[in-house]
Image (cartoon, rainbow, N blue to C red; front, side):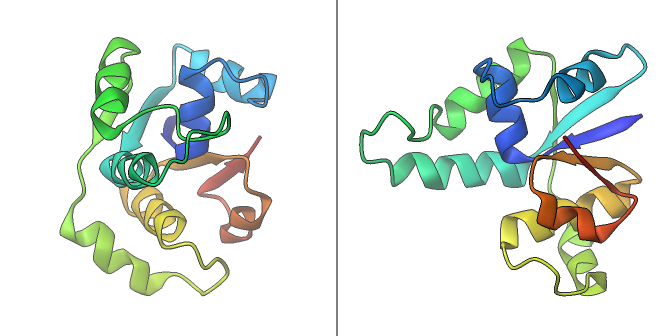
Length: 131
């Protein structure tokens, strides 16, 4: 299986957050599974890092820190391709978050499965697994 991790899933994984369900950990740890994180998620993290206000629940990584952490965790960054952006055209308007819509379009185009905790994204069907 080829998994594309939603931004919160990769953050939970890297910070050992107890909110990450055991099923998600097991899926990512399966030796037959390849996991990737879109450059869009790195951009989302960088934006939220710049907006942080010093609270305990703020973004734990800058974009650069996330990129280094992905490398250490052997999680592949997936580059943004023009076709990923164009593939958003094919999505019904079931979810309004532009980052999530981009990730869904990317997963569909790449034949990957988006791993998320966002139940609203599940409406996009087979290209999504909610844990």
